[in-house]
Image 1 (cartoon, rainbow, N blue to C red):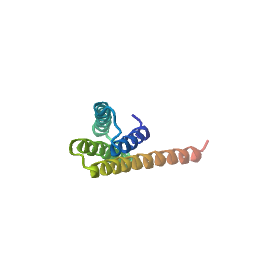
Image 2: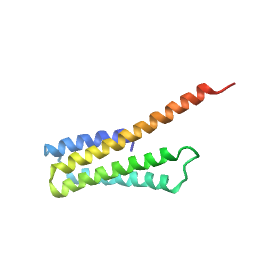
Image 3: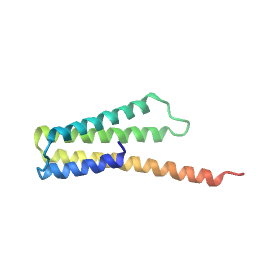
Image 4: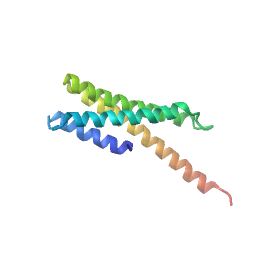
Length: 122
């Protein structure tokens, strides 16, 4: 699941949960669980492999972003159990922070690639 798609899903879900407009809570919970499983698999891949030389910081940031998104979903599950709205806000904030980190990584990599391509001597 693309992080932007996941974030948009979470935003919509949080809005609907706040307004008590979820028709099938089990389906929403199943989708959240699938998203967490996907995030955990990606995290495990990053954890299992060494970062290329010079990319250690990007690897650590990506792992942090994945963890924030995973924990954000945990907060939404906590809301489903407790009904406390603060968990929705906290969960969405964590997911947004994770998305911000992923977006920063993407821009960093794209800018570095553009610089590298323009700096080649040929």
